[in-house]
Length: 320
Image (cartoon, rainbow, N blue to C red; front, side, top):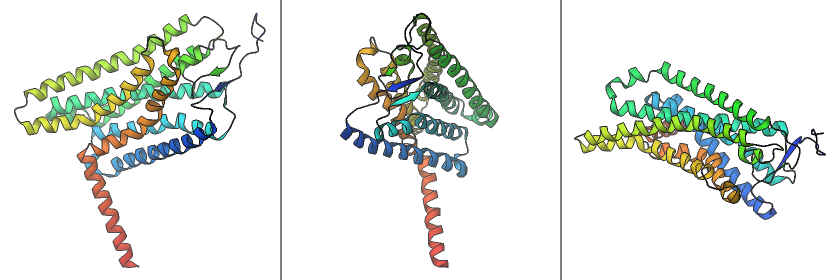
């Protein structure tokens, strides 16, 4: 029993999900299954392409392969359980399951924020200091930056998750969402959440302010450098190297900003759910498409791969 109250301690939560209509659930199951399949195939394909194509063995594509790995992990935190919710009437998630889901969400979300900032710095070095690019962005530095990304992600995740679940939960256990997000979980706490919300805001700012600052400063220098280029062809090439990353940045930060930076987020739960679906499930599917469709090096590597596969098929038929 909770101290001083006639309520039992919460041992599980109910996730209301996206809809309670059976017909809609069937349609959404098919849609999200397709999205998840494309996400896995696209990102695993991107990782394999970068690993096996020597022209893509550069710092930029190493970081892109890490982004693909993060997208697979991030999507896998939400999508399988969401798919299961469309097939069953049991919408409950255990207290421990909710803790694990939130911890993994924060880990991979923080990791993606940091990685996008590192990728912006990579583009800054490539365009503003091209002759020193491979010296500055060495393989050792790239690996160290990825390790730091995961270390910071684990620290932020442990602090934020501990901040949310250290509070007592003894009353309602219904979360109006399809995953254990921090704000709706805090709303269920049986004690004052002022301190918890301040901690949430502080550590969220601790991640977003430095990363957004690195991105803005990097692209400010990039813009100045491009404007100083005398050749239109050089300017076009420089812009093209940044186009995919800028698109990924716009998709990720745009949707996250619209979800979390609102005057009264409690009054727009349905709106938030749709936007949350976009940045947790749809963006991991879009990232490999953005980088493949708008990147000539990736397209060239895909063409070489397809050509090699076709030649292998012809040789096998000939041997047969």
